[in-house]
View 1: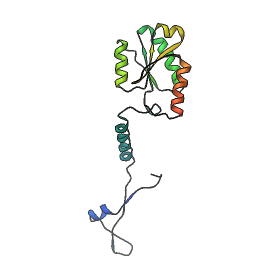
View 2: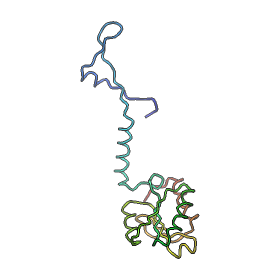
View 3: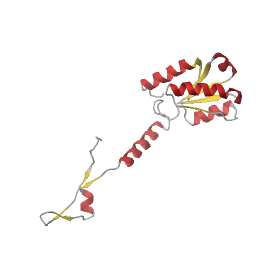
Length: 162
């Protein structure tokens, strides 16, 4: 709907028998202008969620990557990775809970997080991240810049999620 355009309703004033006295001293039926920006937006979001089954395309999803350190020992490296992703305008969160990595991956899958970055000793030593794609599994290890390029390409090209 174009900005400034609002649907005009001739039906409701008649149903409610609304009238006003005009400059000619005669009764006139008013016209109602509907404006429901939030109602329309809410309906659109509901249709979008239903259509995607909550599995949004990468460019739209609130959290694009979940960083999953294997243990507390790797949280500082996770914070460095998160900072690099933030600078690249990638929305990422760190799951630094003291849970097994399998549980963190499963919960991220259920939350429909598109990418999971698993960080352990090998990844920290090599300056890399082990990448998992939601519902596709392990994509292997890559450096952080490679992951950033992967995500940016998917976002720029508005690739749909398969």
